[in-house]
Amino acid sequence: MGWKSLDDMDLSGKRVLVRVDINVPVENGRVTDTTRIERIVPTIHDILEKGGKPMLIAHFGRPKGKVSLDLSLAQVLPALQSALDRKVRLIETLEGAEHLTQEAAEADVLLLENIRFHPGETANDPEFAQRLAALGDVFCNDAFSAAHRAHASTAGIAALMPSCAGRLMQAELSALEAALSKPERPVGAVVGGAKVSTKIALLENLVNRLDVLVIGGGMANTFLGALGADMGASLKEEDFYDTACDILAQADKAGCRVILPADGLVAREFAAGAAHEVIALNADTTLDADQMVLDAGPASIDTLRTAFKELKTLIWNGPMGAFEIAPFDTATVAAAKLAAERTQSGALISVAGGGDTVAALNQAGVAEDFTYISTAGGAFLEWMEGKTLPGVAALEGASG
Ligand code: AMP
Image (cartoon, rainbow, N blue to C red; front, side):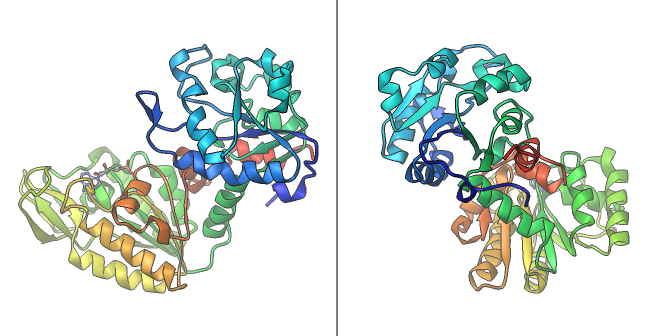
């Protein structure tokens, strides 16, 4: 934990540049999900309470270094003001930030217009980072979800001024360090989702760190196919059978137990309410050419119940089946509830994140019951892959 938090910084009378991720979904000019905005509120409040003046730096969409009015942060301003319960002033240009008007200087909170309007941002141009750094006295990075990018406002700037993690970044890093760097053992993971090909690095890293790895979803079909099963029309990647075998061999060598589904819900069409049957799954399974496994079955859920009882720490990424179409959400929902119950009883530390995972846990109604749910997609996955995140590394090597 080589980074500093807001508690380590003297902010009285200081201009604090705060990198936030408020890249929220907007429809017809209105924010449809304010989760990311709500999560930065504690940081801004703490900075104000410590006598600092926050200037928020954020991106919105992918303007590719050009000013594009439909990607203006003006759309996010009303939701931001209401979450902070304060007036926020949008500063449209860097020149405007360098020469603040009287009115802007008096505002509680400033928001710099979409930082990706400037080509120097994604290029991590040192001169651009220097220009940004000159706008403040302290840098506070609260955008864990952008920390896998080496951009000027996420990485470059931290080397140029006293820097610290904001409250959300601090919570993300603490939760992930507790889950993966020095977990309470035994530690396990549920890794589900569509494809092995997108999660090879992640699986390779996890088998060397975990005691138990549960593989679910379409990925499990690829593993079962690799072991010799004929998976019919199931989602699977035959080109990755060798990779799946390698991962199983690595797990074996590292002493990580891999749990594949012992049975599945099998249908002949990918549709909500499709007729289905429970079929045992193993290396000898032979499905009809039009049959597909869309979810794990009841015996698999029983295995998970037993496995979870042994675990002290659980990491979760990806659904156990095609959870968007009932009843093929059954295993995902059941497993999520089991993990939530163990967490609530104090027996388990549970950390979830990445892509569809948050949606799946919301669907199970247990998002509040996990120890920590990461709002970061790509950054969470890269962390699980064991990669160094440039935004975090920059905080660790920051100047003060
Ligand atoms: P990912 O983005 O890799 O986490 O994959 C999530 C997607 O995988 C979701 O849209 C699920 O519907 C899909 N999925 C999971 N299991 C299956 C399965 N057995 N058959 C088809 N799709 C699946």
